[in-house]
Each structure stands twice: as C-alpha cells, then as structure tokens.
Length: 242
Image 1 (cartoon, helix red, strand yellow):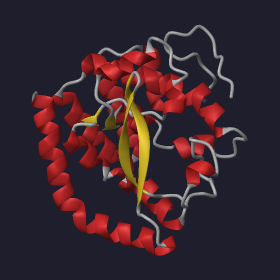
Image 2 (tube, rainbow, N blue to C red):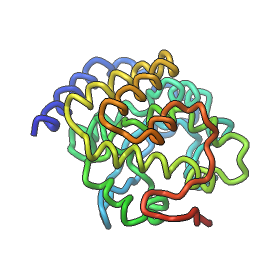
Image 3 (cartoon, rainbow, N blue to C red):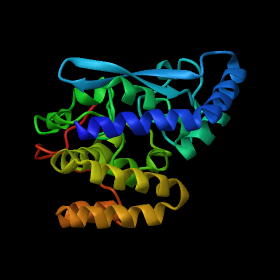
C-alpha cells in the first residue's frame, strides 16, 4: 500500500513538472513525419495478460514491422529526435501515466515484449510477482544496451543470450527486496546514470552488496567484465534460437 501511494505521488508530481518538456518533444517528433508522437507498446504483465505501455516514439513510423524487438545504437530506424530522448531516457517519461493507472510501478522488473516472455523459464515467471517498472537495477547496469547490441547481425538473439539472463536475475533479486527505501535509492541512481554512469554503477554495486546479493551479481553490475552467453535463471544451458 505504501509503495503504491509513493508511486502515485511521485508519478503525478513528475508529470506536472515535466509536461512543458514533454509537449516540446511531442511537437518535435510530430514535425518529423506528422504521425503520433507516442509509441504504444504491448507488454506482458502476467501469464496470458498484457497492457499497453506508452513511450515517446523514438523511431520511424511502423518501426516494429521493419526490424526486430531489440534495438542497437546504430539502428537506422532511430530518428534524430529519438537519439536525443533515448540518450536522456526522456522517451520513458510517458510511462508515468502507466504508473498512475496501476499498470506499472516506478521501480520494478522492466516489462518485456511477448516474444521474449515466450522464452521465459519457470523461474523467470516469478518476475510477475512485482509490477513492471520504469527502472530497476538492470535499467542502470544495461543503460548502454544499444551499444552492446551495436553491429550484431541478430540483436534479438544477442539480447536473449547475454542480456536477458542477467536482467532477469536483477529483476528476481528486486522482487525479493522491494521496498520504498530501495525504490528511492534506485530512482536516485537512475538519475545519476544520465549524469555519470560510473557513479551510478558504483552505487548499484554498493546497494546490491548491502542487500546481500551474490558476488557474481555484484560483479556483473560493475560492467568491467565482457558479457558472454549465459543460461537464464532456471535453465542449465543457453538454448535460444529464432
């Protein structure tokens, strides 16, 4: 109940403060092709259920029909305005409306496309024990996701082999330690990630350590080691094919 009240107050305040910038970017996006500045993205909320997540459109019209679900930094579908709002994470601001509606929380496991959820192990389905969020541990650790996927011939495959397994682990860890106190710290670190990613990563490591995370999870949060194919939680080997 306290977490939900916190979500409502912060998301309403955020929309009130950011609406002038939101209107500006909406106008810039619309002027590019005179199409809706919003991207309505179906996302999974629980088994057999989904909701429509709202984002500022950072790609060309009908981009989902012109490529995969995962987006590399050099993806030609990204517009010039899209590059700016993606870098600052401003494309996520409309999701504050999803938070107000109760579809999402400010902090929680990032919502996934149905195609990725279809690959979930039984263990990964525990991610639905918490409302999906705008940010979480993995949002900070993998804020450079586009750069990780850059140059890949199959970004979706690479995402599911080297990023999703760790995103799921961070999400599962959050579901076991979620609280308003943890949420506040992750929101602050998310802001820091835009200003100074190294500081944010050190903050995430410190928070994980205090909460009793495994050394392996803390190490991945440092992002000092290369990301290699790894089994998702509940699986014994990497078996992802498209």
